[in-house]
Length: 60
Image (cartoon, rainbow, N blue to C red; front, side, top):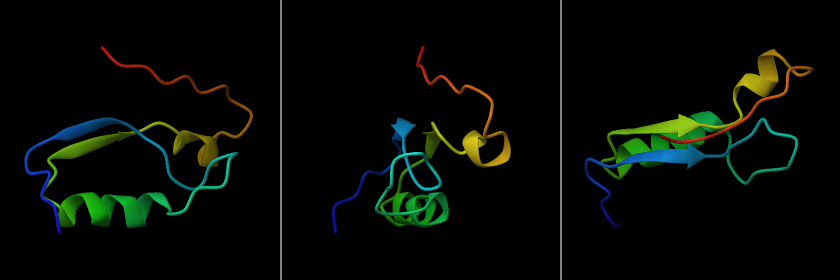
């Protein structure tokens, strides 16, 4: 298994989302942790809790 030790991924998508994804956000978090990643920014998780709110992703 490849290691991604220490990186932070700034544009992750996972279920739940309006587009079907192959893994949910908990599976994705576990996968990233197992590969040694430091963190991630989930771009779509807020849609589950506020489905009528428009969610915009971005990075600095």
